[in-house]
Image 1 (cartoon, helix red, strand yellow):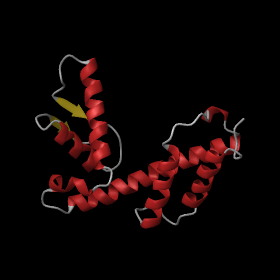
Image 2 (cartoon, rainbow, N blue to C red):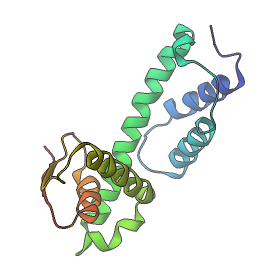
Image 3 (tube, rainbow, N blue to C red):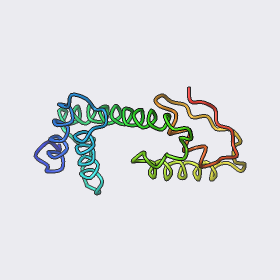
Length: 152
């Protein structure tokens, strides 16, 4: 059973403690720094089997995943509001720090869709919640000749 004596697990637990003690997960210097450290810590491949983590660490991991999702939603909301303040929001998408990653992801999703369908769909619906602006903007740029339905 893997627990907190593993250096990687200990580092993630330390970051979790710092992240979970923040007053807010809204974009700020501290939030950005801690999540950047978390990403940089977790990027290199490692042999840890998350299914073999002890119960306490499994719970921390679940809580951390929830906090990451909340912080991501707040980040998108923050930048959606900024982008929405421009007359032409599509001209300013590059202010969103993860915009290049969104382009890569939408390209990957589009290619996967293409591999499994003989015809490119004329309409795509994004089903989910959260700020739709960035998702729909990336989709409309990926395929400007298709109709996109508003996110529900």
